[in-house]
Amino acid sequence: MENHNELELQNGVSTQHHISLHDSTDETFKEDFIEDLSTFSEGKIVEGIVVAVTADSVFVDIGYKSEGEITKAEFREDPRQGERINVMIVRMENREGRLVLSKQKADEIVKWEEIRKSFTSGLPIEGKIVDKTKGGFKVMVEDNFLAFLPTSQVSIRRVEDPSTYIGQELLFKIDKLNGKNNIVLSHRRYLQEMREKQIAEFFNTKHVGDTIDGVVKDVVNYGAFVDIGGIDGLLHTNDMSWGRVNNPRKYFEKGDTLTCKILSMDEENRKVSLGLKQLIQDPWETFEERYRHGNRYKGVVKKLTSFGAFVELEEGIEGLLHVSELSWTKRINHPKEVLKIQQQVEVMLLDYDLDKKTLSLGLKQVLPNPWDDIDTRYPAGSKVSTKVTRLTKFGVLLELEEGIEGLLHIEDISWIKQVKNPTDQFKKGQMVDVMVLAIDKENRRIKLGLKQLQNNPWSSLKQRHPRGSIVTGTVTSIVDFGVFIRVDEDIEGLIHISQLSNERVEDPHDLCKVGDELKAAVVDIDEKKKKVTLSVREYLNHLEEKEIVKYLDNDGTKTSSVTLGDLIDMSKIGE
Image 1 (cartoon, helix red, strand yellow):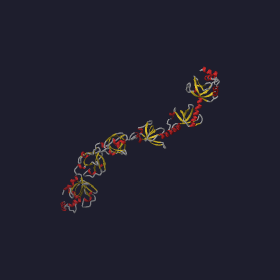
Image 2 (cartoon, one colour):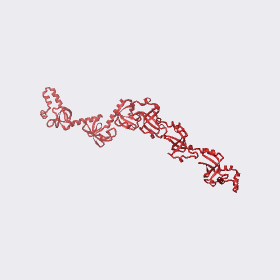
Image 3 (spheres, helix red, strand yellow):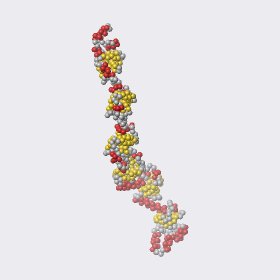
Image 4 (cartoon, helix red, strand yellow):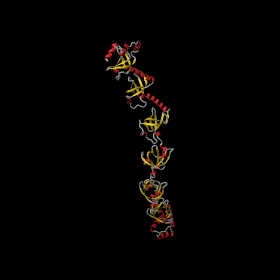
């Protein structure tokens, strides 16, 4: 290479051109060559060919009489021999008579021109984000110029972590160009323009019913947004599956690739509805090929509501299991008492409507109905042991077995007492023996009785003590309006204050006390009201006066009337 350079200095022309000039006798060629040399001037950018690469320099032939030299420091990578590059003519000849060229200055001018053309034409320019700065980023464009990219212009979406953009090579639109040191870029505007083109292309080339691939960008409660090429389509939960989709996040994640069908397109509002289930057949179209009334099927509980549970028999086939169809015997207020989400159950198909795509299912129908033979297990007149489950003002509900209850009405609790409040006699959980009085299978009612386990004392009482008969009883209580006496075991009779004597009585306490025995006439026995009405006054009117007078004469006392005190004394000795 040194001999090569020395030859150039001695001759003042490259070897190739030197031979061409001396070997050619064509005058026309000489003139053209001289004319070509006149086109070279300092500051001009020309194309040259790398002819040699040394440790420190690169030699380039630009067609001038001598080859130009460029320091290797101007090259990021060593060029290859024969490679074509742009260079600037810095000096036609230095002190040694050598052509001086510059690769960097040529690149700077060429690339600046590219930047300027990009700005005026609106075409995007490529750049690399190299660092963060206040309010944005530093971007290297055309390998030579630093530009500013505001944070707001780096993306269409909100920038969560600016550091993730460092090192990225992107395309930009030039927003401002005020000299080499004032270049403002926008990647956001580039993205928006590209999106507009993609959207326009989408609506020009796609149609309702087309299948299209997309990538899930976001998942929300009501569906998923799918990027289908510059525009986001909505895949609603109703169109994800023929079955129920309560939480789309269980089925899709960001980045998932989907193949969907276009259901609707609104170019004006740029909305596209997508469907996934529409790619497969609706299972309701073949429903009757697989299901029959009265048959049993296995399903999965998908949802619980206050009025029932929704059970999925297969994807897209879901029916209502009403709360009334959960048990033959139990009173279920909410399905959660017996069912759980995702629980597998066996149900019976009770009814269906293909037009409305609804099913009516039953759970209790797959189990024996305990009411079918209730009268066999608990025949009328039988004695059963029960447990108090509920107390009401009209009676007591007693459990015969799980889910089977009967009513003990207040009228069937006692032959003698009038029960006004069952809580005075019964407690929840208490065991009670009762008699089955009647069973209504159709309405699922059982009538129970407690008093029926004993003989009815009122029947014998009326037989033994018809109206007008005389009874003897012990005073059990004295009240302002009369006197109660026990006439037969637990049965008491009332002598009203007006019936205590033929004379006016102001206070019954003045006439007798608890424990005294009295005789009285039976006025009325009301079994239904459990009342015995007695009268001393009527008893006195039936006594023969001579027998009373005789008794009094024998006692040495004469009077014109008999008092309650006299009767008490008489009752002690008898008639």
